[in-house]
Image (cartoon, rainbow, N blue to C red; front, side):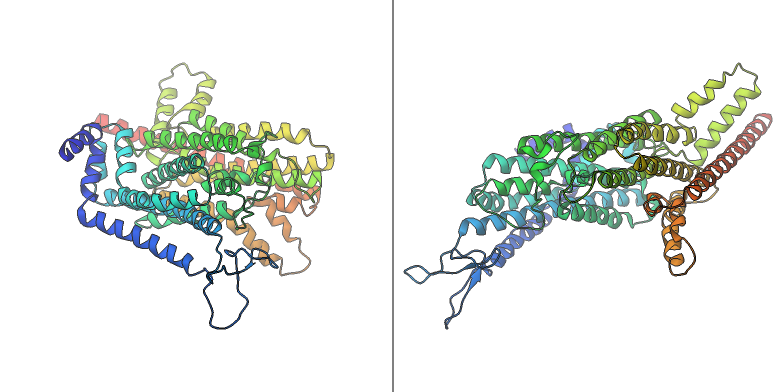
Length: 566
C-alpha cells in the first residue's frame, strides 16, 4: 500500500517524490516528532508552573487563573474549596494556552518554512542541480509546487503533531470548532503566501552568496512581529495587519466570555474599514477579505516565478503585468486610507498622515517594481542593437513604435514602464486629494506627491544605468546604490541638525521622504527649487542612459557585422 502511494505521488509530481524521499527518513521523522512533542510538553508545563500552589504560611496569593475578587487588572485573589484546593478558572487557562500556541505556530511555520525553502534553492543553485531541474519536462508549477510541499515536510510533521493540543485548548476554552478550523485555513493560506514569496526570493537572490536564507527568514520574522503587535490604527498601515493571521485571534477570543488582554488583542478591530465598508464588523467579512487579499498576492508571486524559473534572464514581471499589479496594490492600500478618523486627530491632519503612509507604501512597491522590470545588460544590448538595425536598414519606422516598445517590450529599458506605473498611482491619489476640505493641505499634498514621484523615477534611472555596467553581481551594486540614495539624506539631516543657522529639513526634499520637510513648513521657493533640481537630475540621467544605449547598440552591431565578414 505504501509503495502504491509513493508511485501515485511520483506519477502526480516527480519533484515532490524527490523531496519526500530525501527528507522522510525514519531518523528525520523521529527527530521532528520528538521536537514537537517535547516542545508541547515544556510549553504546557510552563503554564502549570503559573498556577498557584499551597503555602506553608498564610499569604495573599494573586493569579490571573484564580476566581476570587479582583483588586488589580487581570489579577484575582485565589480562594480554596472545602478540600483546600485552589479554585482555578480552567477555561481561562486553556484560552491562554490556545492564544500563545496560535501565535507561536504562526511564527514557527512562517519563518522556519521560509528559511528551509530559500536554503534549499540556494543549495540547488550551488550544486548546479537547479539548471538540470529546469531542463526536465515538468512544468514550472509542478516543480515549484513539489518544492513547496516537499521541502518543509518535516516542519509539517511538527505542526501536525501540535494540532491535537491546540484543538483541545480551543475547545476547552469554549471557542467554536468551526472558527478554529477557519483559523487553520487562513494560517495555511498565509504560509502559502510566505512560502511563495520565499521561492521567488530564492530564485533571484543568488548574488547574496549563501546569506539569502537568513535574510529572507529575517525579513519575514520582522514583518510578522510588526503585524502581530501593531494595533489597528484606521490608516493604510492596517494593510500590514491583514497579511498576518494573528488578527484572527481577537475574533476567536471574543467568542468566549473573557475580557482577554494581550499585546495583539487588536482593540476596536470591529471598526476596521476598507473604503468605509465595515470590514471588521463580522468574522466572516474579515476572513473573506483576508483570503481574497492573500490569494491576489499569491497569484502575483506565481506569475513572477513562472516567468523567472524557466529563464533566469527574464524580468520577474512583464510590463503589462506590472500595470495590473500597481493598480491592484493601489486599490487595496487606498481603501485602508478611507476609514473613519481616529479620535484626537483633526480631519486635515489625519488625511496628511494617511497620504504619507500611502507614499511610503508606494515607495516600497516601486523598489520592488524596479527590481522586477529592469532588464540585464545583455538584454538591453540586444534591444539597442535591434533598434539600431531597424533604423539603419531604413525600414519604415513610426515614432510610436519606440513608445510601444518602451511600454510593452520585454527587453526595453524600464523607464517608460515606471513612468506609466507612477501615473497609475498618481491619478487616484490626485482625485482623493482634490476632495480634501482644506485647500492649504491640498497644496502640500500635491507637492509631496510630485516630489515622491520624481524621486522614484530617479531611482529607476539610477538602477537601469548601473545594470549597464560591466561588473559582476550587478544586483548587489544596484541594491547598495538605491540603499545609499534612500538612507544618506536622513544621515545628512542628522549631521546638519547638530549645527546652527542651517535649515536641515531641506535635505529631506531630496530624499525618499520629502513630506518630512513639507510638514515643517519649508518655504515654497525652496520646494520649487527642489522640484526643478530633481527634474534636471532626472533629465541628465535619462540622457546618459540614452547615450549608453546608443553606444551599446553600435558596439553590438559592429561586433555582429565583424562576425559576418569573418
